Amino acid sequence: MLSDPSPCPYCGKYLGEIFSAATPEHVEEIANAKTCKVFRKGQDIFQEGAHPYGIWFVNSGKVKLSHSGDEGREQIIRLVKPGDLIGYKALISNEPYTATATVLEDSAVCFIPREVFLGLLQKDPTLALRMMQILSSELRRAEQKITHLAQKPVRERLAETLLTLKETYGLEADEETINVMLSREEIANLVGTATESAIRLLSEFRKEKVIDLFGKKIRILRLQQLIKMANLQD
Image 1 (cartoon, rainbow, N blue to C red):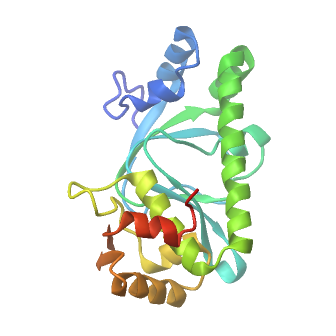
Image 2 (cartoon, rainbow, N blue to C red):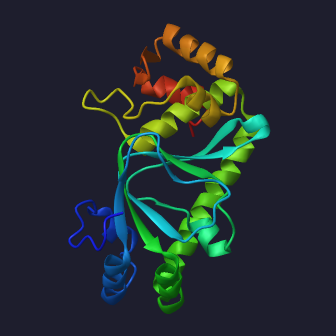
């Protein structure tokens, strides 16, 4: 890792946003303690089962959090974008990581040591409240995903997954193509279905002219129809 990057060549506006609730003195403490690194596509930031020594903050790039399920099959549990913290649940609970963080493209990530972060949570109640809000929001999303896995058909879940990818990573310059490249297996893992089912349904969506496919790129042609297919309308 880079030592004492000041000013950090990777940190953009996001670090200030996530810690905006902290006092200026505590923000400076974080800035002085953090170290940053660029992870290349396919590299792991941390691995499931390892012990956390701090939290990680994504400044640029894309990251997936995945859990190893039955027979070693990967289950993607969360997609991470710039501005997100990762690894904080294991750190706060003082337990091993329950997921592996893998970069989907070259990503700049900063590391904040355990003792610094936990010390600030004890000293700064506003920052502690902010972390409680982040944890509560993630719990709500997890509960929603469990409900959808149990109750929604795979076709609806795939449509919702494509919309989630759009909301998480945005669109490219054409304002139609989702700005992330995932394999069919990764999409299936997000949906919670077999790869063959995901491939078949993506082909159906394409035949219905709701989306178009270019390798790992997905272009949304009829957004409102995709929303209806996801059963998300009010």
